[in-house]
Image (tube, rainbow, N blue to C red):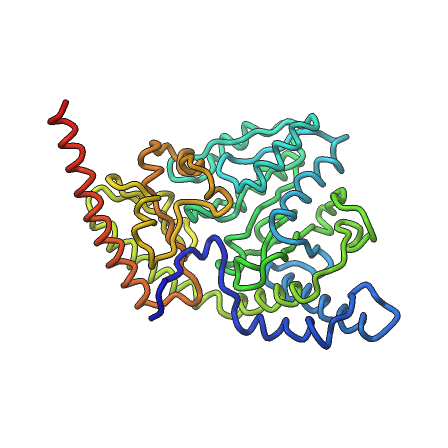
Length: 394
């Protein structure tokens, strides 16, 4: 076992060596521009992109013509939300989302509000799930889009996607989901789930950083989005820019591997997560955040009442974990996702997210349990002792 141990796979995953192997030729001998259609170098690159498009589509039950390559899920989220708002603004200007969405969705919605759009930010229940009755009540004749994350990046809660999409469609709205944490980890099918737009990213599924995709439904209904980047009209006019061929090939290979190994991987990771969780919950005043039944197999978000999370992470130098989303880690504010569940600032600050992955071993989990327990016991003792001293002095 090598130290430090990486248990922050929600933030990013290490690249699978098999993905790197697939990518390498496209940096050297297969270096052509996929848009160069008048010579073999371009044809070879285009073939690599086309095959990757099929691999991505297969993982989510889509057609390869419905896959638009982007620089990552943040761009995909922005293209979907802003693109739908601009394309369908004559039909309506109302978007519905939740307060626990990724910042890429929330900030894109804030941008839409500046353009005159109306956005409803639905609260969630204490377990992190959407209240379907509240969603139904929020729909109006002006609603053009409902955007709800498939699996939450901080607490791992899986939303009732089929039910949510059914409500959106009932009211004539499109349904979009940021499925970054779910795709490749659990079965996702855009048709059976009723999804019209879906964002995903390679670096969350053991692929390269800087590449992702947006699924855009072609029929039943045919969805259109206004491009947010102008240029050569690449990706069916929805996303201009020279294609990142090596990255796209890597994304395709990562999706292929997930399709082959997802079932066995989910079973193994959920067992390791449950072992970690059960052991840490033996500590006094420790709590799991979010619904424990409808949850991604690799995520455990746990609050420890008597400990400050940032201090705990600093003390556990050989254990890479986090206290929330990587995109908000620079903020001193408690996690807005945990606050949305009704947690106090203190309890939200005392939460640790454990994100297991493909290369996580049982030995590493055992070590994580030991280190965390030892540090928590010490930290909690000091915390209580300090409180006692304060009471005596006052």
